[in-house]
Structures are given as C-alpha cells and as structure tokens.
Length: 145
Image (cartoon, rainbow, N blue to C red; front, side, top):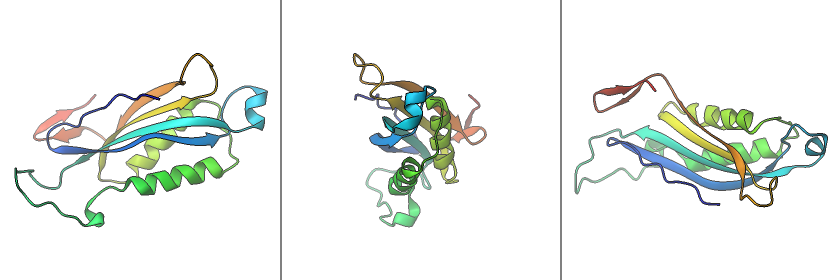
C-alpha cells in the first residue's frame, strides 16, 4: 500500500509508523463480527524539537529524549490481540490518535486506517484523521486548524 509522506514544519520532527498490518474485529456486518480483518495503520506523530537545530550540531542519542514508535506499535498489537470489536475505521483511527497523543511530547498526529480486504479492486478503504493537543505552536506561530 502506498501512503503519502507528510513533512513536518521547521522546528518539528515526524515519527512515522508506516503501513503496520494487524488483524482486528472491525466492521458493521455480521460476518465482520466473527472474523478478524487485516487493517493497515500509518501514523505520523509530530514532535517539537527540544532544541534549535543547527547544521553540524550534535544530537542526543538517548532514547529518553525521543518519542518511541516501538511503544505505540506494542500498544496497537495489544489492541489487535483483544477480542473487542469496533464498528468503524473512524473509531479505530480515533483510538490510535489517542494513543499517540497520550505522550505529551506529541503535538499532533495524522492517522491513516484502511481495511485491506474489503474491495478486491482497491488496496484499501478507510479514513485519514488529524488531531492535535490544543493550538499547535511552531516557532512563534499558532495553527488552530
């Protein structure tokens, strides 16, 4: 599946999970309640840089200084392993966004959730959402939308 690349603003970095394939109980039809379906999840987490990036500047290599994609992946795997059913890809996308935004370093998130086995002629069908914690502040400007 091809996903578009979303670039961060200056002063931000984007932590990406691209096309994570997991099986969920998802859908409104009776047959969808009985069997898991493959879902593709792509997450772009926008994080404010904790410093002013400068050419040649030495960056921290300490994991504690960065948002870990591995933490979100493990939470999504646990969610997929549960037997909890969700009707809509929109609902699952909101759950993914909430997981990402639980890390207070994440200023905003774009989540793409697609069911991959529904329409044979399509790689996937689904939804893309963008959520953020309050006004997004980047280098002295505020983006309320």
